[in-house]
Length: 264
Image (spheres, rainbow, N blue to C red):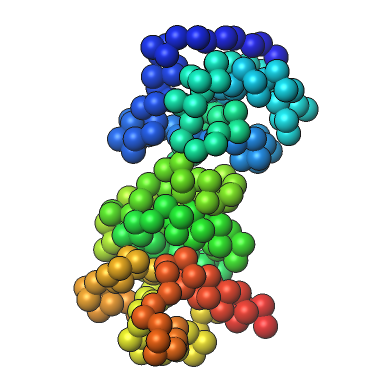
């Protein structure tokens, strides 16, 4: 393994790392940050394309933790104080990487024998989207589509919340809502929208056949325009004392109802 040391905060590589904290630069460079040894280990197992791996001097001297047996071609070390400026976590573990964004094709979402796709419509909380990605993978969903107004799926908080699912789940991002719905419909999927006043309770809906489940914004839910063009609207019954579930919780219930129906 080749080890290079960087000590200047004005180094071009470190400038790029800081730039990747912003969505516009992640789009410009088609790259994002992976922080933490567990996530980086998962990325290496999944053969995620890594441009650079950067470690704090202390993390490197302590033997790279879980990555000690990884076959790394190159590693960059930086002083601890400088690493703290690059990391986005409050207590950084000491290692991060620049990863290439993998572009998925619609065929990767719809080529399954019985596709189950999630449309995240204007989900704004990174933790919600990360959990939604993780849950979608756990429920064997074919993929995820995010619409305009949804938090960037390559936001560092989203990637951490997804706990490695980002590296496995095919995703199309930043589509217009109408475009996402039409894409699913063209590929033979029924469009099911989740809302408080759904025409059916979620267990009454037939989720056995190819289906796209739309999950709306945490505060506003789905727009009337989306509800009108959906093939079916479904509701999760709740106590009168509870106004709503968060987006990730609602998606979990609906996805695993689809798993139940498809399994039995």
